[in-house]
Length: 322
Length: 291
Image 1 (tube, chains in turn yellow, orange):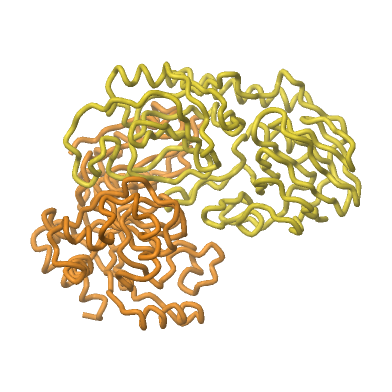
Image 2: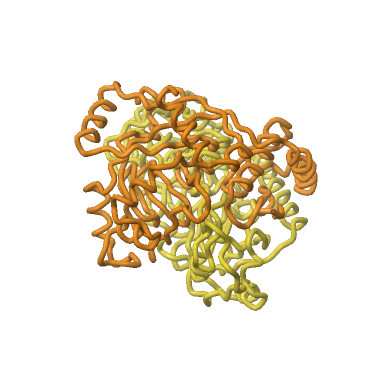
């Protein structure tokens, strides 16, 4: 079974839950930015949670099916259509051989997850089917989809149509989006007043926001604690001796615009970081459109672990309800 | 050298071995991360040594962050007693300094540079009191370099010059990062050299280019068939200045599958190195020539 790409959309890639184990040589996890939505999409069509799906950014692709399949679209509100007829998001539906799946304009969120029963069956590279475009690795030929691509799809029975995730169990960022973070790493490089201001400011997602990282702007520049630059760091007050970057870490080059690293993170570099967005909120970042207001909210480790549990419980509820 | 621990959210512990760069800090990071690997702690998913720091990623559903921290602190204590000796390899990397491709790129981004009126290599030679381009090439390729970190993007090595501090080449990064860097550019920022494994954004000064690929996701290149990235932390690099004719010939040899990098196994001892850097380096580099 295969799916033919008629129109690729803006930036549609094959993603699963990622490729752990190679960050030490600069190969990031990759995988869907919104794991929650990706997992739900797979469950809706009867796949295992880590099957490969399509991640579509801002705009959906147009796909023609060569065999019958069950499909579900989760994450962003990107309304699907089968041969032009509307279908619900977060709900499984059938696409028959020869039919075309297309999408209406984006209503909410940023990334939609398109699961097809059987899963996208591109080769497994270093343990994952996810696309890492910067390294031309994995996915479909290491790149985003193009018109004419024929995507292999695995064998799967396919769940019935009409399976759905109730609205109250879906997860989307609020307005302004609250991104919970644990201060740390090089937080001590900025003054106490600057730390307070960083948390009080309402930032806006900058246009430079992608799978590598999300840039935010609109807050006030941060004041640094004076120092003599350590050997090897560089002279700018925001420079450090090049170090590893945690996923979700918030670096602020020059003290002006924070960048939160995401699934295709650069694994290290020479900019100081003020802390890290907690694992439970990483999904939400993937759903932020440019210009969306956002605020960083300080939490403790205990609160971060509680949020992580709550997220896991929500997923359990989704599964139990199917 | 004071070790500093920090949580990186609920899934990472970030450990700074020292605020400043030194081979001692690197060896501390390498010995602790090697010990963490051996300890096979349940829940650990990534072990990433860096120049003077390291990072552990773990699953907090399997091991509590506070327990992870305790494990690391215990390992730090026992690893500190280890000797700084490393069984590693020395790799010769051919470089065409002052090549046309990085030159075209650096001219395109000249307004982002500290000194728009000269090239990156001329500028760096001047601020390091080296005698022009030739003096720079001599200093850059005269001593070996240590791979103290692999990362940023896939397979990119950060390299630390194996000479005493006053002789180490230092340069600032571009005022504003470039949006383009040719693949296989030999770059420099702070005290670190690097080889850009893929084409893309970058802020390091650009000095030359190597014809020797160091990352191949398709694993078609002969010497990258076992693994797609050539470098790992602890490798030692010797730059070999080449001319345009040798560059072109090497590119063709790589394409035909006839090029193999010169690589020799060596043992590195930090104590022995510190006793007589130049003498020790001469022996290391001699290994490449079968001496």
